[in-house]
Image 1 (cartoon, rainbow, N blue to C red):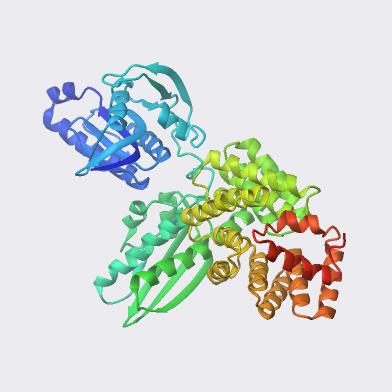
Image 2: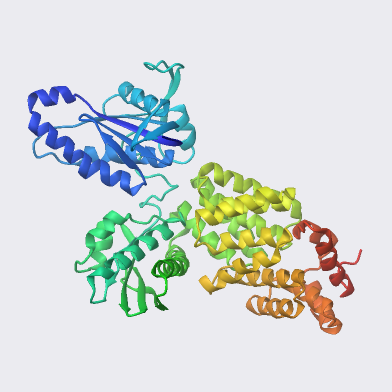
Length: 582
């Protein structure tokens, strides 16, 4: 037996006994169709599991309360829309609970299951009832209205259960929540099954596995919907018409590709296509030697996703730029803010904050908007673009808190929360845990790796940070904050005593982005420590021109060294170069 916490959905066919009495074979066929055509596809899309069918009912298990509730809503919506040639109208009542369950031989038991079953029995036909345990998990993460029914005594449940009812089941409330992507507001991407160009049909397992890995890795971003595998694999080995497929799937972007394996070599091609125009936004070819097929599959999937995500963002920014300001929605304002942030200027960040404030007026529960606002404050704090660095970094932590309250699976919020704990509280343990969670939530996000590297860098572990920093630009040569990542490489080399490499990487970071004062700070320190005093003074003079407020307080605020000797070595080099007077 195994114990675990899970979200349980219990569903029951209303009036099953009456329907069986009227037409037993027909009712059995209708219920079987409901299971295969409505329930199974819906829960598969959201990571759920059909535990068992019980004639007139179904028991479902999910690892997430959000996915459980969204599945319940989608099941009711699909059920209402499916035309019945036999004229039979089938209604479901659904109960949702989150609790501890016992798993044995694939079945589930315990109060977590019992409460869901009792809620289903309490529910009205066509409705969804939630326990307070489930409601508390989803209340700020889905765009549905709930009605508080108060505490109810449920049969064989020792204590009263606080019950909530999904108040509206109309078109507006039955859409998937903003957290996981609403296709009406945020444009979706579909990944078609890759073509196996090899002569051997046995290679299908590799090609299909690559497609599935790309779908999964793109889904980690959570910033745009990704059409589920079961929908896109319906087009396997069929003629492709981009416009028709995107229309059928409700997708704005289509990813397609092929793989050809010859001996120990494999060639993979990939294209990203914009549905509205048919234009290829991105195309790439990858050639690899196959020593470990699964390792190659993982590496290629990750690199493809890291390349595709910014291309979609850029295409969306171009689209939004053509819209009239009065027509902008929350998603549009977020995209504009992201483009402004990428300029890495003080004015750009100030304007980005204005865009995000407008986005939050339209959608106060947008975890993406709160996360991007946190990122704005974070950069303004560490780059000296705020009148109060401490206040900016505290605002970054607060915004990350708000983002996680909207969606605790938002990787950017987790990473920024960790950075906020480091900068405001010097809480290295919490910072490390949060940035590790960010990487786990989205392994293909260079920024998540960048955050983790920063924690290692300032925790006295610069050699452990370097592989993460070097991987960033290998995965994404056009990483949005590439100059900052290279500047962090420089600091790691400085702290490790590799001064020559510290100078080389700092100079590279400055070439990549001349306005990057963090890179210039590391350049001055490395030059001085290497004994190149004349060059250090020239670099220090340029830094002082660009950042006249550079002082000890700035270093202590934005260089949270855990080890005093590393702080002192950095400060001493800057002072010897003529900086940090006073």
